[in-house]
Length: 200
Image (tube, rainbow, N blue to C red):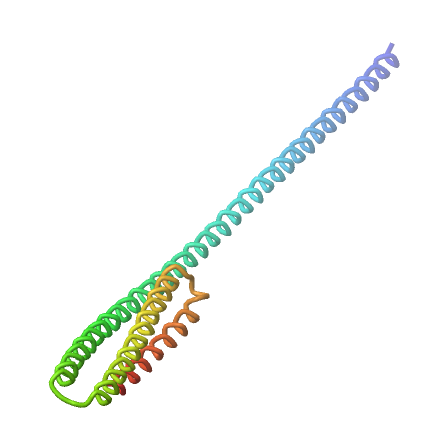
């Protein structure tokens, strides 16, 4: 009887030991699962942070690009404004030059009319026929020369206005060419004025 009790005690002790080991094993598994859960959460948090950083980097790059485009647009507008002011200035200069040339042309025409009237009166009052013919021919030659100068002057003015119109519509790439044309035409006008002064 006594041996049976001792055997039962040993069996009970073994069961207690097994139960304790099982509890420890289950606790270890729970702790490992807890650690795995925390690790997964940290991975998810790190991924979210990486996504947020990438989004911020894209926003910064986009704003920098927009800033560069804005500066480029302002620069282009300033260039266009500068070219427009230059075209307006050239137009004013050409307009003033054209008005001065018109005034000079009217003065020449009036002077020629007075000279023609004076010569006509002289021819009517005195001088042989041959001399009258020669003076008449000289007047006609002078008149033709004056008409030719006037025609060239008008053509030069028309060319100047065409150049100004082209400069107003052209971009910066054609601005230098327009300046060259304007300079050449102004030189032509000066040459015409010198020629006209010579004949006067």
